[in-house]
Length: 112
Length: 112
Image 1: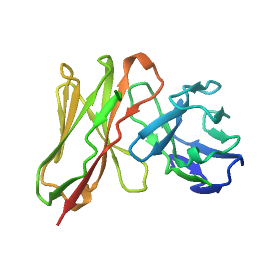
Image 2: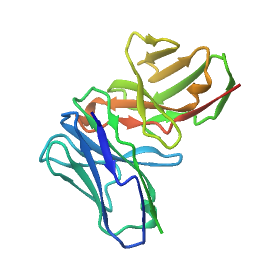
Image 3: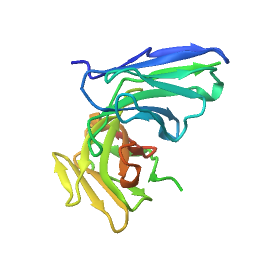
Image 4: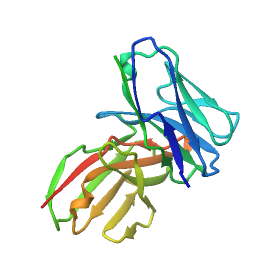
């Protein structure tokens, strides 16, 4: 039982390059989330998906797109990476509105 | 004003000490509260939920004060393994199933 799996774990991009961060869960949860974590800022919500087929913007969506491919998978795409997107990205899932969130191990992204 | 505020610390305490963290939240309609623990370069993991009547889990006690809009975490008999960052997490009622809101975290360093 892997829980929440993110790939890749580390990535270095050049400014302007694109990439997709993958997230897959085997917990049968409906809701999935993408957060970014920066020093002193805490975790900030980028996008979320309350259920398969739906996605909504969070607090900091600019520069990102997402796809909820099916119930298990939720990907985050950077179309044209910028140094300001250097961060640690976490995918999370929850079963219901008042339940705890489970996190993937994170992706450390550096944009140079 | 941030939705969830925490003292960033660090709190440096000797083994065996009792330490308390507070967290304030701005949305009075918040309905769910949690403490998460995050080890260095790892993903956040649920430490405990916080219930209205307060709750205890071994050496950890969580309290909620809705009138003053703060939650607290008390750690008794600190262990070296308690060294981590503790994240205060709030689920605002009016965001539906969107997401949990995270504080920036309080860093605890337990020293031998």
